[in-house]
Image (cartoon, rainbow, N blue to C red; front, side, top):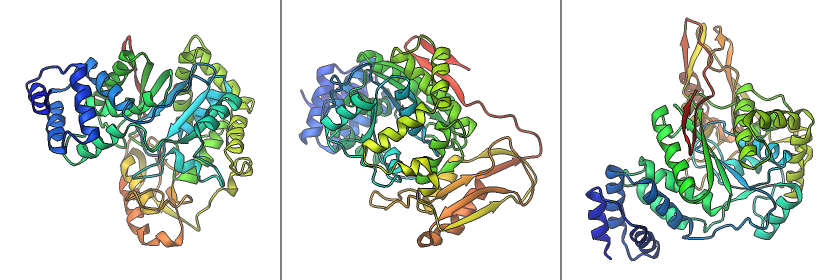
Length: 443
């Protein structure tokens, strides 16, 4: 078997066998297939696509290229949740405790952020002492004991995916649905979940900017899950504006805590309830989304969901008093208001621009070596549909003095991110579609 023959075969639009895909991934991982040949194959995939079976084979080979997690020692059906990312997306910090409180174990491996704001792990590290690195046995034991653990990803998980992604990044082959889908799902499968709920973002702050592309990606990932025996559903949710009001690590912890208390922003609470409801159904705790939602609301109202977060923080060495009193979380020295320069209604918010502003203030990483300022970020006071008058506060910038050099650019980006209309703007839907193995349901 030769790589050049497999490149030609895919270039000509033919399907590769499972053995041929395994040969490519193994050879590339071991270094016997060079970058230039793998780049040629990726470009062939970019133009010719892959079948559902090919994509599943690619996913499984990447998942098995490094460490895998065996969750069989954890009792119950393990349901994972994955978001394709967005600005202000702190859903894991709400959903994990909420679902665990309802009896579905959550054994979650999350990543750090590169770009706008930190990832889930960075956000949790805003809690003093919180340990994101547990040994496997500690991880399993904690989930069995309290139903919940969130830790960093293993350094050697899906190394073939990491190597291929780096290559795609510099060869203009990132925007390939099969390659994106297999990259995401390889990590989920390596992480050992029995079932997977995907939150596929769509809009200006998402990787997929259009609803049709988001549905295509969601379907490809659900097809992979089905092919490899994981019950998988995908929710297409809005990222045409940031989720919630807080963008920044400690600020997002505060907002997540408020949401678990039933006092969070409506959009964040609603998206979390929708995703968590699907997790309860897949976990066998509820027969329908409606039943699941009632259970979840009861866990918020009773305080059990917040208590579950506190138990996780305590178990992982964090200062639980910062959950009881979120004013003890890192606070920025400076809080600068960005005020409206016109009357009207908020018509649009470019979520990506808000995210970049947060990064300029120190909340994200410009390079992989950047150090995150856990207190920095942007607090949105106005969202799409809200009325506004000249001089009213649109947002507040939180920063420490060492990041003052980014202040004016951040202020400009936030003000420029807002679009205005003279006419009343209807509220945007939060969820556009549901993709299951049975098909696509648009709302």
